[in-house]
Each structure stands twice: as C-alpha cells, then as structure tokens.
Length: 492
Image (cartoon, rainbow, N blue to C red; front, side, top):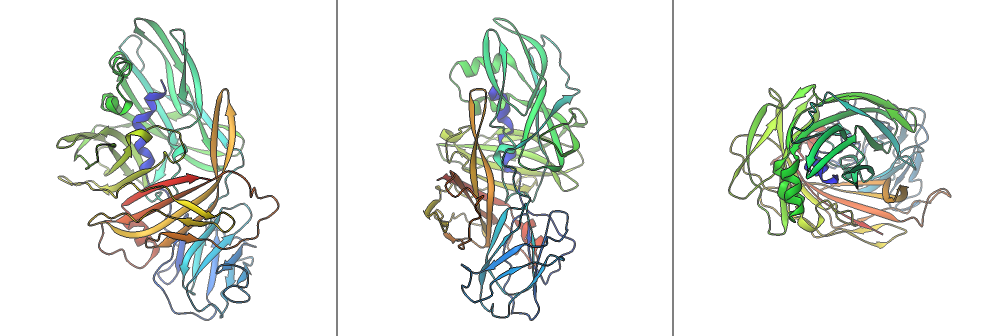
C-alpha cells in the first residue's frame, strides 16, 4: 500500500526558497530564505548588513563573518548586529568576500563572493532537534464500499513557486510509515497518507482503514497545508504490481480529482489539523509533450495551479516519448508545468544519494517543448572541518542559463517508529552564490560546544538555471527567473 503515495513524488519539484521582500530596494543585495549575491557594487561608507527573520523583524546579536576566517582578509571582519538588526560594514572590506551569518534559533547561512555594499539577509528558522508532528483527518472523501476503487488523500505543506532553493523531499513523501492490516498481511503506508475506511475485494474481502495522516515538520509556527485526493482501480493496479511491474509503470492509472487547504499554527510537539478534501475540483485540463529522457531515466510531468503565490499540485503522470499527456488542473488559475527525471534505480529509493533529480517549472503554454538540465553526480567533501564542497561538473543544456549554485549541510538524526529507522536531516548551514561554481569553500567558524561536530551529515547541492535571457538586477527578478534545477547529495 505504500505505493499509493508515489504519484505525488513529483511534487518535490515545487520550488523552495525566496519570497519577495517589500522592504528591500534595488540598491540592496538580498537573501530571502536562501542567500545569494547580486551585481557587484562599489564600496559605500556607512553601508550596512541588515539581518531579519521570516516576519521581517530585526535579529539582534547575529554574528557576521566577512571572509574565510576571523582576521582574514582583514582585522575587524567579525561583527554583530544591534537591536535594529544592523551592523556597519568595515571600510577595510574592499574586495569580494563570502558573508556568513549565525544567530541563535536560525540556520547559519553563507553568501558567496559578495561585494561591500548594503546587504539584507533573511534568516531561516532553525530545525528542531526532533521533528514535531501535525496530524488529523482529510474530510469529504467520496468513499463507497465495493466500488472497486481505492480513495486516498495526501497531506503536505503548501509551497510557493519560489521554494526551489530549500527543497525538502521528506516534506512531500514521508519517510515514516503507519501500518495497516488487510487480508492477513501488514502493510506500511507513508504516514502523510489519509486512507479512510473502505471495503473492497481482491480474491477475498479486505478492509482498509487509516484515516489519520501524520506529517512531520522540522519547525514550529504558522503552517499552510494542502490535501490532494485521488483514487485508483484496486484490482488492476495490484495485478500489475504482482506481475512485476514497477510503480512508475502504473502511475498513469491514478486519477486526481481535487483537494483543500487548511491553515494551522504548530506550537506543540503534536498539533491536530483537519484538512478539507473536496474544497477544490480539478476539472481543467492542459496537454503536455514528453520530456526527453535516457533509457535508464523516468520522465514525470506534474501540473500545479498557482493561487496567491502558492502552488497546488493537481495531477502527475509518467510521460511517453512522442505522445501527448493530458493533466488535470484547477480552472481559471495559472498553470505551471513541472517536468522531472529520475533514474529508474533511484525512483522511490531511500539509499544515500537517491534524492537525485532534475526538474523544471515553467508556465504552461500550448505546444511547449520541455527540456531539462541533465542529472548530475554526487558532490564530495575534501575537508570536513572547513567544509570544502566539490561539486560535479556543471550541467549543460542549450538555452538554459546559470542563475545560482546552492548547498545545504545537515546533521542526520536517527529516529525509530516501530521497526522503521529514519535519518532526518536537521539543516545547519545554507549556502548560495551567483552563477555556477564547482567548488564551495566555507569559512572557518568556531563550533560551539553544543554542535555535533562528529555527527553523520548530508550535503545537498543544486545548480539552478533559467530559460530567460535576462534576469534583472534586483533579488525578486532573480528568484522569479529560476526555471530549472538539478539536485544531488552525499552523506558523510
């Protein structure tokens, strides 16, 4: 039964990262949710680095390192923000240098090759050492016993189009399992599935009953959740899987009909939230061409409707070379088509590095011919103390231009539920630089006694590109221009 979740794997392509900041101006370098450098500027007297949180509130006491280490490239390069979240840039800073910011309760982040000028940095909230949980029911699913159909819903965080740079696969497909029993067998079902009680027949009568979804969240605070409800013909799918077909071979047997959105505030280790399952109806349609893919790659297309800046997944299908695929959408909403490729051997796999993926998110237009960046090899770490990250060769696809290179370093925290052991990434350091680079050398930052220097870790890297010829000078233009990403990771 775990396989019923896979159709929404492609929702991992929804973009993680940066929102527009109304307080920023075109004269500022800006980091929002993920940091990056903009066009170089001349040094300015009394220029400031401003640090604030996701609500635009200043962060007092944030420590800022300009360069590779304290005292390098100049004395006085380690500064602290005041009560307004600001720190005056030293006049000795005259050449491009990395800027690293660390503040209690937030994820450390580094901006590569920054120029000495006004810089605004938006910090991401630190991950909890043990994830909190949101749970509840998805309501109004049209279950009918013995209709030969299985009805289900997936619960996941609602994401913005700009959320490419902070991609977190575990928030879409839960690595945690709940277990149900049917026909004398015990099945693992991803915990963020809601499977209401229903009776069907397969040789003998069976009852499926897991109405409560459980969604792990790495942070507390306001959340916006979405449900996506669907169904499939039970016997047909089970027969194909029992005959040895892979799940991507039956992906197109799943039909998606609608969903709903709910707001919540997670303040406790467990928060209960009910999500409507029938508030939105996916009765619009778009037709898409297949993405080119190698023989060992699986091409997937997903439709997402954009509402108030949020992306609502509405359909997902495996595409076939030379054929047109129809995807369901929300009517009267802008549609973004998300194409992706994964290696067959890494589809639904949990092995280190199996999160490798290449994806694009482009506004739908009739007759569009999709293209992707190629899949890239895993990064490597050559110096653990200083975190020198060696990236794979930069991808090349005609017509896709470099935007940024990003990396995320996480501690891997082991947790166990029943007989399932899960490694959950707890993000510790976010890095981003303008353009594509093949090596990232992070500064020497003194580790606090509480940091887990010897913990097992994961480094994730992204090459982010665009099909746009120009991307503008201000941060919002740069973020909005991103259309393509290729992602890989390594545990160390």
